Length: 134
Image 1 (cartoon, one colour):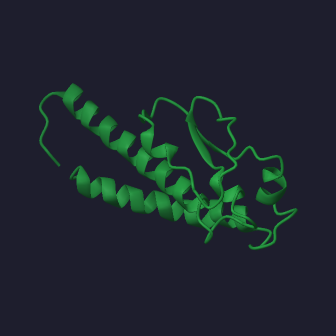
Image 2: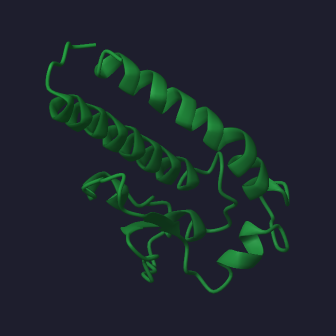
């Protein structure tokens, strides 16, 4: 890690690293939720409707199929703010909580949240630690 004599510069460096960690995590989670390997799919519309937004859930939907969203890449991340990934299709809740799932196990989201997201966070932390020499 670089040497800092000024605590404000150290704080700014650590904040920049934390912001990068948040960005990497959000971008990866959105990418994976937009993947057939993770999200249930029929015609692909569900996996194309995971939207990222700052401060409040995005209320958008798209008619697109098999085209995962990438809007998480365009956000400016700041760890002092709150970010959301949302899917606003009328049937998203029943698919997310396993009530109507065809192509994945009914527990797909719980499994993703409890096992895959911690791995995404750990990999993001490893990358940021290396990038920032922490």
